[in-house]
Image (cartoon, rainbow, N blue to C red; front, side, top):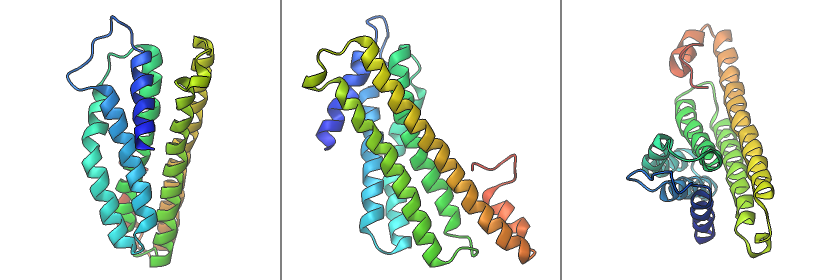
Length: 209
């Protein structure tokens, strides 16, 4: 599967770059594949490690290892328009990983969530990340043997479709995070402890969620 995804990301980013576009020192295709691999490993870790704390620690480790790819791919700004849309699609999957790790780490320190609820929340994040990552597989249609007769318009339609669907998952993860934090806030408010929740997750101007 990883080999297939490598071919997908490599072929996609190469096929949509102009001869005039200059590569940066780091190769965007390798960076994209690093993000895809990281997302897949996070999902696998979330599903195989039963203890929530140990699972998150492993997820955090995988994310931190892949963050270099994420940061470097964000810095690539000399791709042509079509390739940039592919880049942004991959980056959104990386951003979903970032939202998962950043916010769930705070929830692990939030007494307003029970261990069972944290397990369910982690499963939800993993599921959303998995679904968004799976959408990248649809891009392999562009380089499959059956697509050799595709014209540029048909290829762009696939890219646009995947971009739109990944964008929806990206928004859904933000909404999911917001709803979970809202549950904590309401519980804390009943205990006159709302300020502590705001400090943990940030104020309206500071919050990542």
